[in-house]
Length: 114
Length: 113
Image: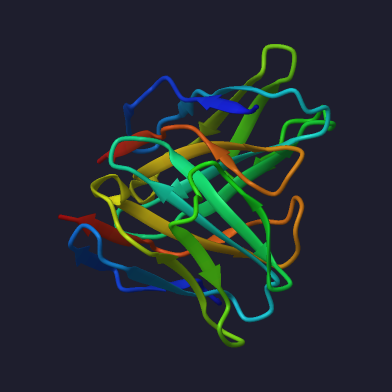
C-alpha cells in the first residue's frame, strides 16, 4: 500500500540555521500538508498546498517558513532561521483531493534545535 | 475557531474487553467532519473512522464505532474486543470550513494481555 515518506527521521540543528524537511507524498495525491507537534502538545496545522500554491496557512507559518514542490515527487518544508521553539515533530500529509478526503500522514521528522 | 478536547491522557484495557475514548469539540461550522486517527508506536497516523456531521447514524468500522452526540458536541470512540495491536495514541480531530484538521491532545491507549 502506498505510503507518505519523510526524511530525515531525526534532524538536529543549531539555532539560527536553516533546515529543510523532506516528504514524498503518495504519487496520485494532489493536496499536501504540514503539521507539527511540540512535545506534549497538540498536533497543529501549519500549511496546505495545492497546484503549486499555498491554499491555507496558520498563524504559526510565518515568514521563517516556506514550502515547495521542487519536482514531481518531493514536498519540502524549509525553516530559514531555526529557533529553540521550532523543536517539534513535523508531519507531512497528502490527500487525493481536498475537502473531506482522507489525509494520509507520514511517520514524521523529529527536529531538535539546540 | 474549532477546538477539540480529549480529557483522558492515558487509558488501559484488557485484551478482548471494550474501551471508550472520549472527545468533545466546538465549532461554528454547520457542515463538518470528525475523525479518529491512530498512531502506533513509531508509526504514522492512520485514519480509524470518520463521521459526517450531517449524518445522524453513527459510523462503524469493524470493531471500531463512534457515539456521535451532535447537540452535546461529543464524539467518542468505542473499541470492541480490544487487541494488543490496538495499543497506540488515538487522536480525535475535526475538519470544517477548510481542509485543515484540528486535533485533540491524544489519548494513549494500552491493551494489556
